[in-house]
Length: 115
View 1 (cartoon, rainbow, N blue to C red):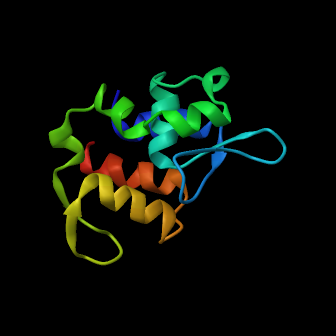
View 2 (cartoon, rainbow, N blue to C red):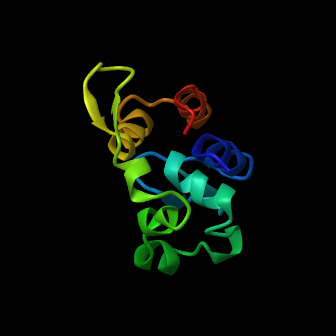
């Protein structure tokens, strides 16, 4: 499964989170950033696992590395908003949190990179 496919799969079962990989909303629903959605889409994290304690003690980055080699997330790509080069991981986080891109738009951009 490609990263973009995993993000889309996770989007089907979560709302969007900013500045947090995973969050439990006030209504009890699960919110996830693009990378959090990818972990859920990959099955690295399941919805029943997600509690406040789980969020405080687990790293999404470590779980995503189980599926994608470090060189994938560390490869340098051109940021589509700033045209500056940075690590893919950092660009995804920035697009999600600062640029406020929808996760589906991030997935579409990653699809164009074949990641």
